[in-house]
Amino acid sequence: MRENRVKLALKRGETVFGTMVQEVRSPGIAQILAAAGFDFFFIDMEHGPYDLQTVADMVRVARLAGIAPFIRVPDLVYFLMSRPLDAGAQGLMVPRVDTPDQVRRVVSYMKYPPLGERGCAVQRAHSDYLSIPTKEFMEWANEHTLVIIQIESREAIENIDEMVSVPGVDVALIGPNDLSVSLGIPGELTHPLEVASIEKVIAACQKHGVAAGIHTGNVDHLKEWMAKGMRVITWSGDIPMIMNASQNALKALRSALK
Image (cartoon, rainbow, N blue to C red):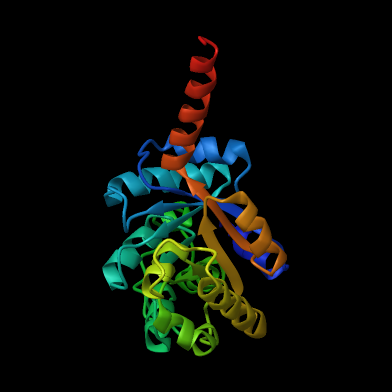
């Protein structure tokens, strides 16, 4: 069965790098990102236009290309989580997780018994269609599925120590923009209140052996957070990559006419 290389790297204390896909629907994006050297990518089912069939195709190519496919699901709802996992996603990020009870539900929905209540269907995309004894597969999946809670609110910051102490959580990943909105400082990602809140998450994660992460397009900010202990580094996404590269190239080309 296929190892989750990102989860294994995090267990070794390493830093991993990924990005977010929110618009491109071709399965080839997985090969492109793998060729670029990313360790993982998120398919955004919260804000993106994706249906499950499209996601399944993208995930399948990602697994074959050797890049870990993770899904940001729309909400903490069982079937919205179980179906992407059955399609082969190697981890899920659940947005707007604010309380320890919600964290326990996340873990329960993503883990097979006795660790959770996920329903078991063997010989699907998640097992590469191999015929594997049920008990062996359940243990493997529980070990290799990455559980990511997204921290995006003042309430989550207040509860963070208890949240990341829930057994089964692997990553607490900051959504800096939504966090700034919740803190009453929308878009002020370097505001002292935002910085202090993120530092609180890092400290709690380090205390409980959970990897802290963040998603932003600013490389300098990512370097600063890495220096402070962030280990799941999600840079940019397909939309800003295309837009920024296009604008920069066109600006250079048009300047040659002057």
